[in-house]
Amino acid sequence: MHHQYNSEFRYPFIKKASSFSSSLSSSGRGDHTYDYIVVGGGTAGCPLAATLSQKFNVLLLERGGMPFGNANISLLQNFHITLTDTSSTSASQYFISTDGVLNSRARVLGGGTCINAGFYTRASTRYGLELLACL
Image 1 (cartoon, one colour):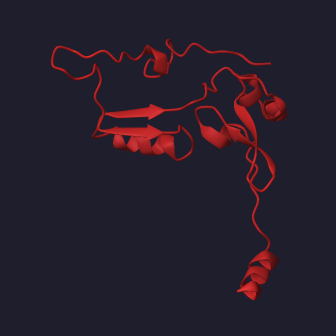
Image 2 (cartoon, rainbow, N blue to C red; image 1 turned 30 degrees about the horizontal axis):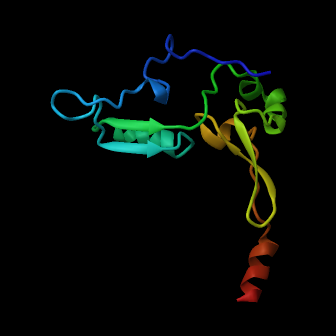
Image 3 (tube, helix red, strand yellow; image 1 turned 180 degrees about the horizontal axis):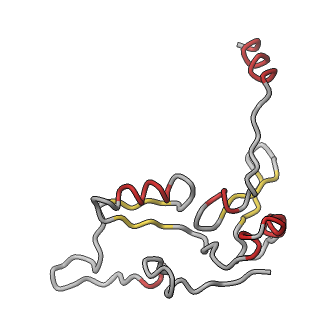
């Protein structure tokens, strides 16, 4: 179940990329100028853009949608639905890595933290010892 959320009411600073004009003003410059453009609104891109925006004009680009109002993201019991959703509006994107591993990557403002339900893994200490033995 996917819900679109119109951010104009609560978050006026979030805009669709298609709303930006590429026309030139009378000064010969575009309508908007930015000191920095941050690509990717995940757990690194959002804080970086927020920090830079304290002193500079920053544009944050995210290819996905917004998590607000999406029950598959905001409700922990629904996170698996996002991982199996292969539609073009899904917050996750299915892919196969170059070594053949099936996986999902985020396609939503907030990045992987929106689709991983807080899970993370660490390599066992044996892995590190086996790696050192190979060297």
